[in-house]
Length: 191
Length: 108
Image (tube, rainbow over all chains, first blue to last red; front, top):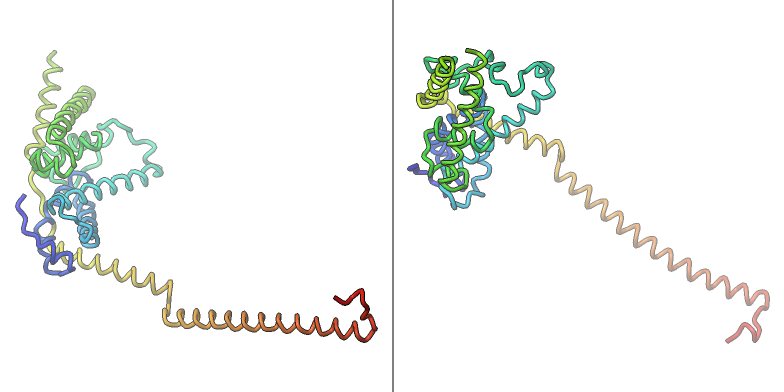
Protein backbone atom coordinates (compact mmCIF):
# COMPACT_ATOMS: atom_id res chain seq x y z
CA UNK A 1 0.00 0.00 0.00
CA UNK A 2 1.94 3.00 -1.27
CA UNK A 3 0.52 6.23 -0.01
CA UNK A 4 1.49 9.87 -0.12
CA UNK A 5 -0.66 11.43 2.56
CA UNK A 6 0.59 14.57 4.28
CA UNK A 7 -0.32 13.65 7.84
CA UNK A 8 1.11 16.87 9.33
CA UNK A 9 -1.03 19.02 7.02
CA UNK A 10 -4.03 16.83 7.81
CA UNK A 11 -3.48 17.32 11.53
CA UNK A 12 -3.24 21.07 10.95
CA UNK A 13 -6.69 20.84 9.39
CA UNK A 14 -5.63 21.91 5.88
CA UNK A 15 -8.48 21.33 3.45
CA UNK A 16 -6.18 20.57 0.52
CA UNK A 17 -4.58 17.71 2.42
CA UNK A 18 -8.00 16.39 3.44
CA UNK A 19 -9.25 16.50 -0.16
CA UNK A 20 -6.14 14.66 -1.38
CA UNK A 21 -6.63 12.02 1.28
CA UNK A 22 -10.32 11.55 0.35
CA UNK A 23 -9.48 11.35 -3.38
CA UNK A 24 -6.84 8.74 -2.65
CA UNK A 25 -8.95 6.52 -0.41
CA UNK A 26 -12.56 7.08 -1.51
CA UNK A 27 -12.82 4.04 -3.81
CA UNK A 28 -10.99 1.73 -1.41
CA UNK A 29 -13.13 2.77 1.55
CA UNK A 30 -16.27 2.56 -0.60
CA UNK A 31 -15.40 -0.97 -1.77
CA UNK A 32 -14.65 -2.10 1.77
CA UNK A 33 -18.01 -0.75 2.95
CA UNK A 34 -19.73 -2.42 -0.01
CA UNK A 35 -18.36 -5.73 1.20
CA UNK A 36 -20.46 -5.37 4.34
CA UNK A 37 -23.56 -3.34 3.53
CA UNK A 38 -26.45 -3.98 1.20
CA UNK A 39 -26.15 -1.44 -1.62
CA UNK A 40 -24.23 1.50 -3.05
CA UNK A 41 -26.31 4.14 -1.27
CA UNK A 42 -25.70 2.62 2.13
CA UNK A 43 -22.03 2.07 1.30
CA UNK A 44 -21.59 5.72 0.35
CA UNK A 45 -23.32 6.77 3.55
CA UNK A 46 -20.92 4.63 5.62
CA UNK A 47 -17.91 5.77 3.54
CA UNK A 48 -18.81 9.39 4.31
CA UNK A 49 -19.00 8.51 8.01
CA UNK A 50 -15.53 6.96 7.72
CA UNK A 51 -14.03 10.18 6.33
CA UNK A 52 -15.90 12.30 8.85
CA UNK A 53 -14.44 10.18 11.64
CA UNK A 54 -10.97 10.46 10.08
CA UNK A 55 -11.44 14.24 9.81
CA UNK A 56 -12.41 14.65 13.46
CA UNK A 57 -9.93 12.20 14.98
CA UNK A 58 -6.82 12.54 12.81
CA UNK A 59 -5.04 14.14 15.78
CA UNK A 60 -5.38 10.84 17.64
CA UNK A 61 -3.57 9.02 14.81
CA UNK A 62 -0.22 8.12 16.40
CA UNK A 63 1.45 6.88 13.22
CA UNK A 64 2.23 3.50 14.81
CA UNK A 65 0.50 1.86 11.85
CA UNK A 66 0.29 3.18 8.29
CA UNK A 67 -2.45 5.66 7.48
CA UNK A 68 -4.20 3.21 5.15
CA UNK A 69 -4.33 0.60 7.92
CA UNK A 70 -5.90 3.22 10.19
CA UNK A 71 -8.48 4.19 7.54
CA UNK A 72 -9.36 0.54 6.82
CA UNK A 73 -9.86 -0.05 10.55
CA UNK A 74 -12.28 2.88 10.71
CA UNK A 75 -14.07 1.60 7.59
CA UNK A 76 -14.54 -1.87 9.10
CA UNK A 77 -15.68 -0.52 12.48
CA UNK A 78 -18.16 1.86 10.87
CA UNK A 79 -19.51 -0.83 8.53
CA UNK A 80 -20.01 -3.31 11.37
CA UNK A 81 -21.61 -0.58 13.52
CA UNK A 82 -23.96 0.18 10.66
CA UNK A 83 -24.94 -3.48 10.32
CA UNK A 84 -25.51 -3.75 14.08
CA UNK A 85 -27.67 -0.60 14.10
CA UNK A 86 -29.69 -1.95 11.20
CA UNK A 87 -30.11 -5.33 12.86
CA UNK A 88 -31.35 -3.68 16.03
CA UNK A 89 -33.95 -1.74 14.04
CA UNK A 90 -34.96 -4.84 12.10
CA UNK A 91 -35.42 -6.87 15.24
CA UNK A 92 -38.38 -4.74 16.14
CA UNK A 93 -39.82 -4.62 12.66
CA UNK A 94 -43.02 -6.47 12.03
CA UNK A 95 -42.03 -8.10 8.74
CA UNK A 96 -38.98 -9.62 10.40
CA UNK A 97 -41.23 -12.13 12.15
CA UNK A 98 -41.47 -14.13 8.96
CA UNK A 99 -37.84 -13.81 7.87
CA UNK A 100 -36.22 -17.20 7.46
CA UNK A 101 -33.73 -16.79 10.29
CA UNK A 102 -30.42 -18.34 9.31
CA UNK A 103 -31.74 -19.86 6.13
CA UNK A 104 -30.13 -18.07 3.20
CA UNK A 105 -32.76 -19.13 0.66
CA UNK A 106 -35.38 -16.85 2.25
CA UNK A 107 -33.26 -13.80 1.70
CA UNK A 108 -32.42 -14.25 -1.93
CA UNK A 109 -35.60 -12.66 -3.21
CA UNK A 110 -34.36 -9.31 -1.81
CA UNK A 111 -32.34 -8.10 -4.78
CA UNK A 112 -28.99 -6.54 -3.92
CA UNK A 113 -29.19 -3.66 -6.32
CA UNK A 114 -25.97 -2.10 -7.54
CA UNK A 115 -23.71 -4.25 -5.41
CA UNK A 116 -20.46 -5.15 -7.26
CA UNK A 117 -21.30 -8.80 -6.77
CA UNK A 118 -24.67 -8.34 -8.43
CA UNK A 119 -23.10 -6.57 -11.38
CA UNK A 120 -21.65 -9.90 -12.41
CA UNK A 121 -23.26 -11.95 -15.16
CA UNK A 122 -24.50 -14.55 -12.75
CA UNK A 123 -26.59 -12.40 -10.47
CA UNK A 124 -28.30 -15.25 -8.73
CA UNK A 125 -25.02 -16.84 -7.71
CA UNK A 126 -23.77 -13.45 -6.56
CA UNK A 127 -26.77 -12.98 -4.34
CA UNK A 128 -26.41 -16.47 -2.92
CA UNK A 129 -22.75 -15.91 -2.02
CA UNK A 130 -23.44 -12.46 -0.58
CA UNK A 131 -26.16 -13.84 1.68
CA UNK A 132 -23.92 -16.73 2.70
CA UNK A 133 -21.13 -14.31 3.59
CA UNK A 134 -23.51 -12.52 5.92
CA UNK A 135 -23.82 -15.72 7.94
CA UNK A 136 -20.07 -15.92 8.62
CA UNK A 137 -18.66 -15.05 12.05
CA UNK A 138 -17.52 -11.41 12.15
CA UNK A 139 -13.73 -11.95 12.02
CA UNK A 140 -14.03 -14.47 9.16
CA UNK A 141 -16.29 -12.10 7.26
CA UNK A 142 -13.88 -9.18 7.71
CA UNK A 143 -10.90 -11.26 6.57
CA UNK A 144 -12.55 -12.74 3.49
CA UNK A 145 -14.13 -9.40 2.49
CA UNK A 146 -10.79 -7.60 2.66
CA UNK A 147 -9.13 -10.42 0.73
CA UNK A 148 -11.73 -11.12 -1.94
CA UNK A 149 -13.60 -7.83 -2.38
CA UNK A 150 -10.81 -5.37 -1.60
CA UNK A 151 -8.00 -7.60 -2.88
CA UNK A 152 -5.67 -7.04 0.07
CA UNK A 153 -2.82 -9.42 0.85
CA UNK A 154 -2.72 -11.54 4.02
CA UNK A 155 0.01 -9.26 5.37
CA UNK A 156 -2.10 -6.13 4.87
CA UNK A 157 -5.13 -7.81 6.43
CA UNK A 158 -3.06 -8.92 9.43
CA UNK A 159 -2.04 -5.30 10.06
CA UNK A 160 -5.62 -4.04 9.76
CA UNK A 161 -7.01 -6.78 11.99
CA UNK A 162 -4.02 -6.49 14.33
CA UNK A 163 -3.26 -10.22 14.19
CA UNK A 164 -0.67 -12.58 12.72
CA UNK A 165 -0.52 -13.64 9.08
CA UNK A 166 -1.14 -17.27 10.05
CA UNK A 167 -4.29 -16.22 11.91
CA UNK A 168 -5.51 -14.46 8.77
CA UNK A 169 -4.77 -17.57 6.70
CA UNK A 170 -6.72 -19.64 9.20
CA UNK A 171 -9.64 -17.18 9.25
CA UNK A 172 -9.90 -17.19 5.46
CA UNK A 173 -9.60 -20.97 5.29
CA UNK A 174 -12.36 -21.41 7.88
CA UNK A 175 -14.48 -18.81 6.08
CA UNK A 176 -14.19 -20.76 2.83
CA UNK A 177 -15.09 -24.00 4.58
CA UNK A 178 -18.11 -22.42 6.23
CA UNK A 179 -19.19 -20.85 2.92
CA UNK A 180 -18.92 -24.23 1.23
CA UNK A 181 -21.11 -25.80 3.88
CA UNK A 182 -23.70 -23.01 3.72
CA UNK A 183 -23.81 -23.22 -0.07
CA UNK A 184 -23.98 -27.01 -0.02
CA UNK A 185 -26.96 -26.90 2.36
CA UNK A 186 -28.61 -24.25 0.23
CA UNK A 187 -28.24 -26.14 -3.06
CA UNK A 188 -29.25 -29.41 -1.39
CA UNK A 189 -32.58 -27.81 -0.57
CA UNK A 190 -33.13 -25.99 -3.83
CA UNK A 191 -31.77 -28.27 -6.55
CA UNK B 1 -24.48 -39.61 -6.20
CA UNK B 2 -25.33 -37.65 -9.31
CA UNK B 3 -27.11 -35.02 -7.24
CA UNK B 4 -24.12 -34.75 -4.90
CA UNK B 5 -21.82 -34.02 -7.84
CA UNK B 6 -24.26 -31.47 -9.16
CA UNK B 7 -24.45 -29.73 -5.78
CA UNK B 8 -20.65 -29.66 -5.45
CA UNK B 9 -20.34 -28.22 -8.93
CA UNK B 10 -22.84 -25.49 -8.08
CA UNK B 11 -20.97 -24.72 -4.85
CA UNK B 12 -17.68 -24.36 -6.73
CA UNK B 13 -19.25 -22.17 -9.40
CA UNK B 14 -20.83 -19.94 -6.76
CA UNK B 15 -17.57 -19.67 -4.80
CA UNK B 16 -15.72 -18.72 -7.98
CA UNK B 17 -17.93 -15.62 -8.20
CA UNK B 18 -15.79 -14.12 -5.45
CA UNK B 19 -12.76 -14.14 -7.75
CA UNK B 20 -14.60 -12.17 -10.44
CA UNK B 21 -15.63 -9.20 -8.30
CA UNK B 22 -14.92 -5.90 -10.03
CA UNK B 23 -13.90 -2.86 -8.04
CA UNK B 24 -16.68 -0.33 -7.65
CA UNK B 25 -16.16 3.42 -7.95
CA UNK B 26 -17.88 6.14 -5.96
CA UNK B 27 -20.32 8.39 -7.79
CA UNK B 28 -18.91 11.71 -9.03
CA UNK B 29 -18.70 14.63 -6.56
CA UNK B 30 -18.21 12.37 -3.57
CA UNK B 31 -15.92 14.91 -1.93
CA UNK B 32 -18.46 17.74 -2.43
CA UNK B 33 -21.20 15.66 -0.80
CA UNK B 34 -18.88 14.74 2.05
CA UNK B 35 -17.88 18.37 2.60
CA UNK B 36 -21.51 19.47 2.66
CA UNK B 37 -22.26 16.79 5.27
CA UNK B 38 -19.32 17.86 7.45
CA UNK B 39 -20.44 21.49 7.25
CA UNK B 40 -24.04 20.55 8.12
CA UNK B 41 -22.83 18.62 11.17
CA UNK B 42 -20.64 21.52 12.29
CA UNK B 43 -23.56 23.97 11.92
CA UNK B 44 -25.79 21.61 13.89
CA UNK B 45 -23.20 21.48 16.69
CA UNK B 46 -22.95 25.29 16.78
CA UNK B 47 -26.76 25.57 16.88
CA UNK B 48 -26.86 23.06 19.72
CA UNK B 49 -24.46 25.16 21.82
CA UNK B 50 -26.30 28.32 20.87
CA UNK B 51 -29.53 26.76 22.07
CA UNK B 52 -27.83 25.67 25.28
CA UNK B 53 -26.25 29.09 25.89
CA UNK B 54 -28.13 31.67 23.77
CA UNK B 55 -25.91 34.52 24.93
CA UNK B 56 -22.73 33.51 26.69
CA UNK B 57 -21.71 37.06 27.80
CA UNK B 58 -25.15 37.64 29.30
CA UNK B 59 -24.80 34.37 31.18
CA UNK B 60 -21.41 35.39 32.60
CA UNK B 61 -22.80 38.80 33.65
CA UNK B 62 -25.71 37.09 35.39
CA UNK B 63 -23.31 34.81 37.22
CA UNK B 64 -21.18 37.79 38.40
CA UNK B 65 -24.30 39.61 39.69
CA UNK B 66 -25.43 36.47 41.51
CA UNK B 67 -22.03 36.07 43.21
CA UNK B 68 -21.94 39.80 44.18
CA UNK B 69 -25.44 39.55 45.70
CA UNK B 70 -24.42 36.49 47.69
CA UNK B 71 -21.34 38.27 49.07
CA UNK B 72 -23.46 41.32 50.03
CA UNK B 73 -26.03 39.19 51.84
CA UNK B 74 -23.30 37.29 53.68
CA UNK B 75 -21.56 40.50 54.88
CA UNK B 76 -24.87 42.03 55.95
CA UNK B 77 -26.04 38.96 57.87
CA UNK B 78 -22.74 38.49 59.73
CA UNK B 79 -22.69 42.20 60.79
CA UNK B 80 -26.26 41.97 62.06
CA UNK B 81 -25.45 38.88 64.07
CA UNK B 82 -22.63 40.76 65.93
CA UNK B 83 -25.00 43.69 66.68
CA UNK B 84 -27.66 41.39 68.11
CA UNK B 85 -25.15 39.73 70.45
CA UNK B 86 -23.96 43.13 71.74
CA UNK B 87 -27.45 44.41 72.46
CA UNK B 88 -28.38 41.23 74.33
CA UNK B 89 -25.50 41.75 76.77
CA UNK B 90 -26.52 45.39 77.26
CA UNK B 91 -30.12 44.42 77.99
CA UNK B 92 -29.05 41.88 80.57
CA UNK B 93 -26.88 44.41 82.39
CA UNK B 94 -29.68 47.00 82.40
CA UNK B 95 -32.14 44.39 83.70
CA UNK B 96 -29.81 43.40 86.54
CA UNK B 97 -29.16 47.00 87.63
CA UNK B 98 -32.84 48.07 87.37
CA UNK B 99 -34.10 45.26 89.57
CA UNK B 100 -31.20 45.45 91.99
CA UNK B 101 -30.17 41.96 91.38
CA UNK B 102 -26.53 42.75 91.86
CA UNK B 103 -25.42 40.64 94.85
CA UNK B 104 -22.34 38.84 95.93
CA UNK B 105 -23.80 35.62 94.67
CA UNK B 106 -23.90 36.95 91.22
CA UNK B 107 -20.60 38.78 91.28
CA UNK B 108 -17.29 37.13 90.51
